[in-house]
Image (cartoon, rainbow, N blue to C red):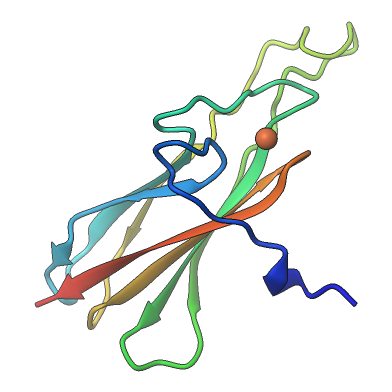
Length: 131
Ligand code: FE2
């Protein structure tokens, strides 16, 4: 029986277009709001068409020493050229990128998951220190 956690793939985001990219400072100030940019295809473009696109990116945070992650945000990308005139004839394409604003009480790891409608689930992580 398949388990969802085993279906996530990962790789180097600089060469694999599906891996979510987490951009933020390596060290932040505890309890002060900072920004985290999450995207797919920063180095290698991912298509954004009706047939092939990124549906969502999820961002979580697990503090040092914690047993469970906390969800920071879920970002859906819902327009991909759909139209009554046919696929890729629509006027709007949501780009697969978002900025989350958050604050943390201590350091930990940011966890990102993304979903491509035909290539499945991908993940990445990034440690942050909070002083
Ligand atoms: Fe894809």
